[in-house]
Image (cartoon, rainbow, N blue to C red):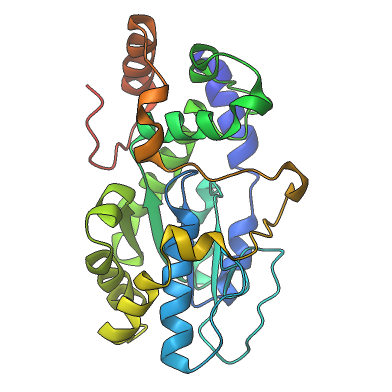
Length: 268
């Protein structure tokens, strides 16, 4: 398995030059799947637009304020922020490349891999049409599932290596910390990105980003709109997936062998 994993890691990640599009932005948010991406973006977008006296984000994923590569931004003259789930090329850590390109500051949103896998499976199990044990073992070629254990490992290893090399250019936010105290995490991001948002704007962003308020906005997902996928709240779905003894062993052994950067999570 190891040779197959490293082959596909090199093939997919080394040739991903999407990070070159980030150089035109003031900041960038990169996130794991099912890590509260839309929630964080919506809170920040609401806080930013309130501070500047602009209309709040139209969509629940706030792509009109904090967009992806294919999302047109509706306002000009405001701080520009992008978002994606991208796994960067190792070239992003090149000091030579950084002599020619100035990268924005990055907010990296992560989540406990175990919980991310459960949440992702609950969200997509009707499309994947397989038992959790089969999904858990994933597809190292990254062709069958949108995200699985191998994607998580690649994501954390790739960003972890770059963060280790350029720690001042990144701030890591954990989904679990965001749930416990969203205001504290927003304040950290606010300071890190130099947004100078007032406490009132940050609190407004949180109050406008409840599940109820976000649910009434159009989702307008940037891709696969026809699937009508519904976000799954982790706290409501934890009990629906049961790890067998074999599942536990596979998860722990795989992460022990391949995960180089655990971001402070304990998988032992």
